Image (cartoon, rainbow, N blue to C red; front, side, top):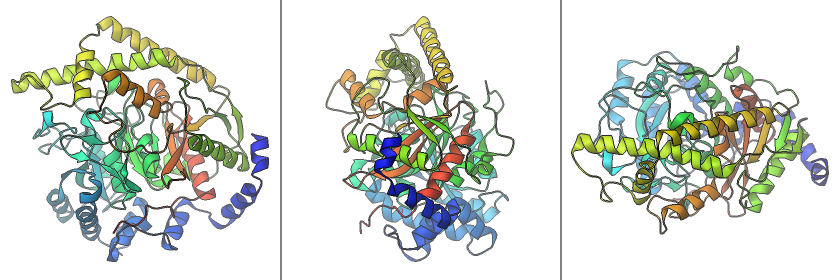
Length: 520
């Protein structure tokens, strides 16, 4: 990497200059946006929603410079104006949110900040919980998720739920229940999935952070597509119950997409920890995650992985974005070298299907039995039906073997990371795709659809297989003006190092002034 850095010598001077001027991630966030970045379609006081991160908004409420009700009204007004264009809302909970503000909010780190939940396995008792599927149209939750209760104790004001592909099964947020979610950077392109609604809402300036989940890249993927920060936590870090405390055999995790690094860290501080019935819990740093963002990390050993485990091709722009990120890391005092763990991508991909598909089939069959119907293409999308059919072929021994494959991969990656603190790679194999390429109603069969989706997301699944934390950092743009993320994967339980590096990168190369163009 030394030669690459040498060919880009001015970068070091630029980074040093930025570090002298921008001493805090939030200062950079507020100053760069207020200093002239274009805010999409903003009117009046709505500018607060994109010039402040969630912690900044909470501070304004705390100092009584704005009220929780005013922030909620701004977010609702912006939703009404922009949702018809980008389609990020699955359900509106305006009146519930207003009632919560009127009752009085808890005193927490995010008191008065508007918040959106992803409409996938995250429930509010009595409210719709449809999972992006016509098969669950009108379904109302019987319980409130533990994570929702933690959000509300932190002071967040939940005013809706965001879109997801059916059951979160693909990397684009397009479904037959809600329609297509569009990328605010270019509405002809995907916002990513399965947390595309959350990412589109944040990128559009409706709110500075939103709930997201990740079972194969679904936090990092939309973060990359929409120019946001997205961190998938370690397995067992964030609660998922009470109905289930584990998703897809431990591959799935809950957290958020955010514009600032400190928001992600502070949200994790407010929500992490085991819940009743948890099978496991990730170890937490003694001083908390937000504390990790306050100072630069020690010099880190970083492995640069530019070829995905399956060996599939990667767009040169994504390769260059990762190399540029490596050069930035070197300029900050970290050591980067080309290296990657050796994994059997074919076996791991088959294991993923062996875990996911039977679970999907079981859920569909249980729902069908409760409704007394046989589901078909009138209520489920073609690839979802194919998942279910595929899932019914697996035996219990197949699932046991798949779990063994995951455990072996986790050991392989952990042993590799005895020599490295982090693995750096592109987040995705290309900039955001056009709509219609990898949705669940494609112009191809199940095998071809699987090939297409796998080629778009060949890097993200490793952290889901192994249970490690992994983040996408928005440091690059394509020649076509679309965001490109760089991904760092850390050791199990070590989100603190990821947060420390992310905050250092945010100070060195701020992204807050990069916002979608105006569309009005």
